[in-house]
Image (cartoon, rainbow, N blue to C red):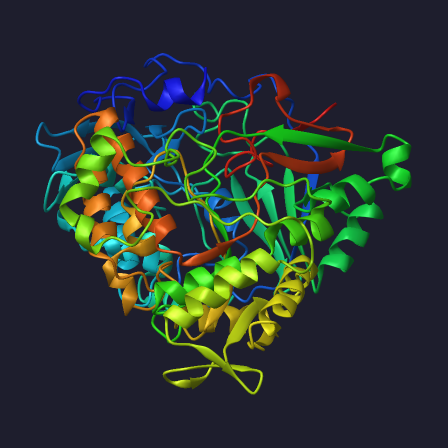
Length: 594
């Protein structure tokens, strides 16, 4: 089924019972036997090994500080409901066997499955659910949970197995999000709550998930083993998933070491993000012999936003004309040609590549109506339409640099003795990059050559993951490389991405410091939508405000994911989820052929 049909289906009240959908009813009936995008007969067994560049100093992905293997949040923790990535935003029972929503959408009651157990055999209780909710809402815990926590006015037990959340205003999406919170074992952490506020590996979490952490060496590897007594193995939501016996995450100091380890057969899989490298460097002996297979996984999700983020909390980035000038100076066509052979499409907006993306040209219909009350304060291009500059692919980028110069002059900047100088003196800023990414470094190196022609000579700081995370959390940067992944069902998380709290509150994803009331207004419209039509219009309006805000210098996106993997490692190619290679795809749906 096409994404448009899935996203734009007519919606009414949320369903009660085995599942819950943002609009309309869940696609699968109460007696479904498995998710449609899995192989329900996939064999079990085998050892899956994956690699990533960086390190880690904690096994708790719910803390604000520290470095944690990102996969642990999804492989080693379980929630009340599980997300189906074959539908834009639909949840089915996991730890909870039933969900009920009040008519006014201010309360949700989850009823625990009586079979739900932690790996040590202890039952998952209502106390565990309430404790997990409370600890994740504390200062110092991961900021992604606190926005929703602040809107919850009550959490109470309902009988022996029910837990009811009450929120301060109708919000269908928030009620669903509460069912996706990770549930921890209260008894393991009681009296040791500091584990949620500092990094460390002294506590190995005991969870209810299919996999448990069975071995690790801090900074080097983490190994998870499938629990043979996992309580939910026969759940319809789990059938055909979590097929491999062992998952091993290896960590490398740089991308070269990571790739060489895969070529040597030390890893089961390798994701590639560089088009030129995919076409040029994946012809090594193990590919030629058939031991390694190259798979391209299409997807239909939003591009999100990847690129250089400008911190508007600091001059000169607080002036939109300067930001537009820096976008004009980014010679995308030339950089794309050098890095990718010119094959990769540019990110044109935050929700591009999906039916939620803004349409070309002037805003029309409901989108125009939503933006009209703020027309006088919106940046140029929001209503009439905004498009990124296009170059001719030549290194000189004369057109872009001429446009940049005009904008800078309008903003009060002139070149004096070869240095761009403005109201606050010579322009100087730092570009902060994560250590180990040669591709990002190459992009910035080419970009800097163009900036020098404007009289700008920024410095580049490439730092390790711990320092990078610390400075990112504190917004201690001028310009930073960052990636936002966006879904087909945006909701409350948009406030953490670019809501007003993130202007000063550390740890949000509002890295640019966007402080535009129109952003909040469009998010509020989205969250309060009563129909799919209004919801889509609000997201498209939000997309316009963000894109015309000129906060990020966008790079490119992949309409497909490139995965090289062992020939014996298979995936359901004939029934791919609409999200493609995303959370819950690899290794979740993969299996080793017997």
